[in-house]
Length: 452
Image (cartoon, rainbow, N blue to C red; front, side, top):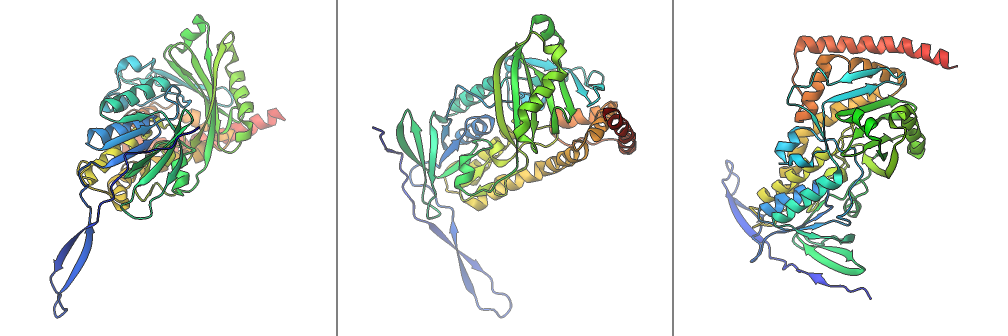
């Protein structure tokens, strides 16, 4: 029989009131305004649950626990991880203290291959001597970040969250229903961080609204040694209608294998067709390889309409923090989790006071949007301009051959901020892009004529 129990029930404190006196304006009578203050918690710390143990959830749990908040980290399956390309920006290593032994590959060369198989080397000349793109496995990174959150004081609960009870008053607890080994349990908490991915249950429970999702599909392939040597420090990106109608396909090196995959928003039902397309493009490079794992997962295409409601905040994929154009999400997941956790610590005076929706919006959401909204909008624009047809994809690859474009791209990607360029070079880049689009439109017509 399944058992049910309530762990750590909360004592609901009474609201504390403060009275502020306001000076009268001219002849207006003196008046008093009564406002509710954030109450101190009676003999305990603020209690938080983080649902989802990936980079977003683990980073949030670490920040909360380090800041003195009683923290519970729910992860349904700690032994597995979300399928992922595994590239992270260089700045994440120092910012999140990622040990170098977790990095499988130091990618210093990239190739971008157009629909007509025109290949451009991206990085061999524009990367500085100390720069590289770190490649790792999510199962390794996720395990490390969860362990660090536990070391900070977070309690890991390997359990499936099945339901949330939304409180009826501003100070009542949220009740989390979860299942471990067929045992049903409940946990009462003051606030919740939803870090449970693109199909977030937390988002559904708080009616956070829907968003468009892409689907990513990849196969991990172990190659013969002589072919794996080719991908020693090289990653490849392929564009074209044969591999994706609105995204790109990839070959990324891992510790002892490569990840070969693709993604799409508008034709998700045809994802396996596009996977066959990328494998056909790279067949000479992967012949003799053995598929060791097949993975698929959803990728959010834009932030949710609601990311904070009540005392619940969404981070990472649950909030929709995956960039267009590149599909990158690991850094933004970890960053949003940490920012949200630190915001809660600030707003609650280190876990001494209750917080509310306004605190989460002010301390977390406003700061996130101020820092990253422009980056997301810019990459959304790039995807709409360059991923719409094979003509514009040819132009994209041609533009990527420009060393200034490459340097600006790496400065933005590796260090996670929009790079400030040279005005004259920026102007030349704009005219060069227009020229590429015009030339490739002509090339595109010629290709279509040949095709038919």
